[in-house]
Image (tube, rainbow, N blue to C red):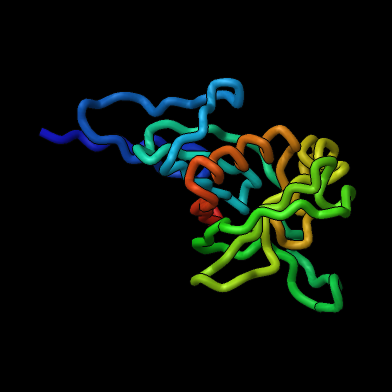
Length: 171
């Protein structure tokens, strides 16, 4: 007999099959990158999760996402809310701008339907202030994470041979 339990936390549903057991929440110190890791970003709550292939083990962390207003950036005018959907991080760059991209400059470019986008995952010089704030709609559309989480995410990206499935959802 199969038992299906659903654990709901900040809009993320984890389905667990028999034998029935609770989902395992890991800390940054306990997370080891493995093939099959994925990232889920809840833009409605500015929370993200690295999730194991089994959907029963995850690492929750704070993020900052798009400002939800019209902005002018890099010669473009656009609504800066982080779009929802399924993405692939499949390009890693080191950017020279250490304000926009944090002290290491690491940037994971997001692709959708195989096409390059302007969106990505990176840190920011003042990310700790952003993440400590109640108002975390601060980026120009990218998913902004702490320097510590950028290192962890990058390890999952590398464990998947330079690929990480990223799902952005609103709740």
